[in-house]
Length: 338
Image 1 (cartoon, rainbow, N blue to C red):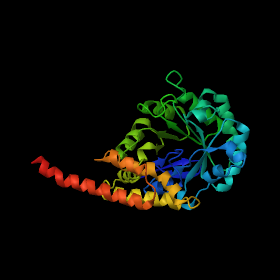
Image 2: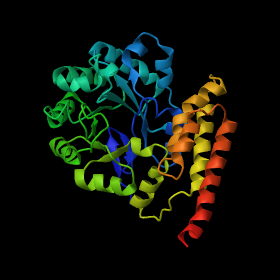
Image 3: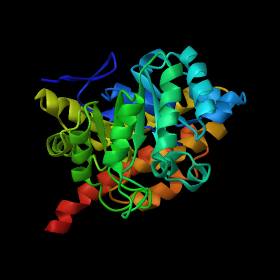
Image 4: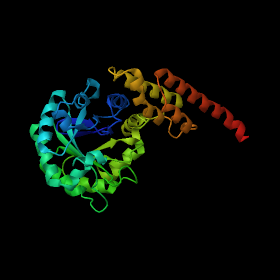
């Protein structure tokens, strides 16, 4: 039986939600993952200064279509006044909640004092949350990491400060800023955060299968699980999680289904970017196409072709050739075994 997690008044099934990932979790990606069972999604991070200065690209990132709900909009910035103005501005897009990014480890974000840099200035981080809460009609959440580095793992203190500032929920990535995406996520630290606050805690890091998801719920006691890189080329993970938690049988997708989904994903990218010439939009699809082949025979060679895709027709040919290669290998292996 699937229970729910409440972020304010927003009820979300306790399966798994899609993480906010800049340059990856665009509208096409969110729609695809929602179709495959993601319980909710969060936007790519949006600059509060970009919004306040009228940047059209920033505003476009805030648009939410009907099939994306429930969905949060993620803002990033280091100045409370700008955060407050942006929080008020994005209400028109009718997000289900606002998320404040205090975990991004990328230099260009950290250098502005935003993202993970805010974990080194808890009073400022609290001011930012209070500013967003003051101007938002929907719940405000915060996503952060374990700390700046191994010598400064202050996630528990930070979590308590965010709760005191009015955050309705928090999401914790089980790595430090210094780790980026290397090493293993520390689920024990997430458990410690969960035990230190009364608001919902969303666990994030190293969830790639339904078994991982169940283990995170069990080991951390978190209220909700967030999947990020584990969904690369694998939107099926959300359906798997949903099925296992529901007690239903689940079959892994066949290779043909993987290729069909890859092509469907590319079509979504083209459909969600009508303002761009197809040859430009297809470039954004290249990395996604490559991810669908990870771990399969001949993947390296075909990934190289992915990064040179120039049209949807070429993507169709790529999928057909990749399927043919797998069939050829399957036909050959029994003879080889003899």
